[in-house]
Length: 434
Image: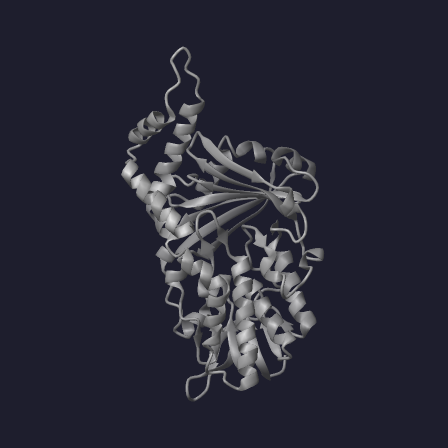
């Protein structure tokens, strides 16, 4: 790396947002450096979900032909739990197992390296094992590059794109991102467990490259959050996502909550005999639209987790595709601004995000987190629904079968759930998701 680099743009963070931004800039013919603090893209990331590929269709047609896929998700389940019960809505379709596919499981170390490779193929310069330690500013205060931890590492650029993750140091230094607010973040903890491929396919009812993704409610005790279980080729990933404030109040350790989930009678049979390969933890920005920082300042754009662009809306928990979408928008905005010399006017970035799914989905679902993380949805309703299902399917001959309405009202009363409140939450849910 030259002592005083001078490029059109420097992108900090080679995750999905950063690699996408660098890809767009390089394809626009701009010189761009993609900085990664780890020894390779993906080395510092924790993976805990599914990548949805539609956002890639436009920039990488036929991406599924060489993407590092573990399994295509063809089975998706939502499970509500109590300590001894589980009620599952189980959906599977063969359509998702064919191109262009709906979602895939993948290892982030593989996926991030693959996407960053596409940026390098387009002309971006990838610099690894390098930390951006400081924003460089000119006399007027405009951001004009970054200082790195290399002795000769100042990189001067027309624009900087910060994709340096949930605790973005650069966004904080620019005054865009406040100090971490525990109310707006959750802690995700995950184990990756090895099992023979055949065993996984038998236990989850899969074949070929088909995969399963379970999302779980009511599995975190008195801590707001949720759980997940999904299949890779010869491993499964299981984990919980926990409210930081709830975790602190509970006095419990996250690995204890995860151990309870793994021991649940509805989960344990899937994991029997599995060998622990990896344990990891990561902060997740779940504040949504209402907690997003300003997205630009003079000479700087912020994308991905650094801009809190993770969608946590109960039935949807998505981050990678939103990171890619925001990175593409940031890269396109930066390329245009550099071409016109108007690098101080970056308002087109927000307009791009508002015109696509990134801010549209966040804005439409901004009330979802408040509803989903309420004590009623987290604890009361899973208990109510599990007990109601148990009552419905319990045969009490010679007693006559009760009417379902009467049974539901009786179960709701036993759990202290007022039907008026339940109707209000249902209406709120309809307004948010409808």
